[in-house]
Length: 605
Image (cartoon, rainbow, N blue to C red; front, side, top):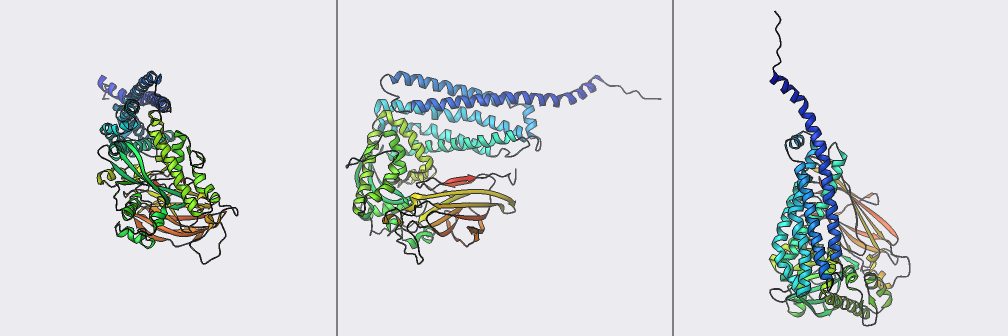
């Protein structure tokens, strides 16, 4: 007897649901995913408009007289854009939550784009809700404070913004860590590109937020809000490279008292030559730099790229010279002055020469050597140039209308690493070292690439130096990943026409050289735990001198660099953790370092 198969209604419904639900979930994800992308684009559009509005309100002349009403209107418009961006980001986050998105994101390999989409939407929501508001709202408050009480009081008033900035910085750091854990590669190229672009933007935002938090915490006290401060200010000549930038030449002593800045004196390096200071910076520093006698040879006081080392030594020199203690040290260069003079307008020297944004570097690091053959006259010119620029900047700081633009110029200076600040106060210095202005070589693990050159010839030819660095990850290994670092150095010095002081070789090499030939100590800094497997110079195998600084392996080459020539150094390394782009150590010279960081699929995902 045949048995009849009876399809119960509940069984049919279950089978139908099993067939329909995946399709419905897929359709839901497609529709909501498209809507979420549209919301994220709208949020990006609002944030772009917000940046333009903030830049317009930060332009010189945007804040007095009739500008008060306009400023209020601009502030209202900025709040509207901020709320709109936050609303779009929140909707994108809502659209990518729920059972369908959660389940899809858990699928092995196939779920990677959905995991990335969910992560970016959540990150955007947190940024718009918790990170951007305190940063955006601080700009009009700072400008209004400058208008009402003056620039000095407004800067000192930054202390009140510190807690909000610190909360924003913590959230930004958390979001960056969350995004770093999202899949780097998937079957959907658009998702991978979106993640990479968002990650790059987030890196800049997290760094900027951290630096704003550091500035709000340390700037008021460093500006003398709680008592007068005195700083040693060095003007670095980047025509002769040193680890922190350039040879320390002219200097000043800067006084800060309740936000008011003044200069107590100006001088040049001849006042510090022949002095000796005993500064103990540890055995590691002594091993790397002791033979160069940084405590008794002023010209070698800043060979390390770690600025706190140089600052300690400079403070020791000043104490040996005058018996006075300083509360910190600051380093700037002609590039710094140029960026700031773009806001303030030109400075006029006693002889009528104008120091402008466009000629600050050229005038001090090239033209002056041809103009002044007498060394004493040339050094006096450097001091006068430093004095004129500094006094012009001091006048600008007292002008409330210029404050926002000056802060914008300082951001440009910070990006190029042209200002470095050290505080003798341990708590302030700890915060400074975590930000861009501290000039610290980080001692944390992770992929790292640093190219540092020190002029070993005594020439002023680094005005003509070009540098490039290509960092390329290779195959994964049991010990991490292979990395190839390619360094190219080019000496553009002309074959004739340069003053003898620029081309003279005080190193007295035992081989024949021509005017314009240069010599450099080239240091490559790798990530902690990295090992060197081999190196070539212009295609020929060479041995590099190994060392260690702040936990980083350092490989050194003594390099002759003839005029009108390029030389290429290639290092083959094994990095223990190279799944993400490296931190780049940027030494600020006349011509910025050109860097190329190549990407590769992760060793583990």
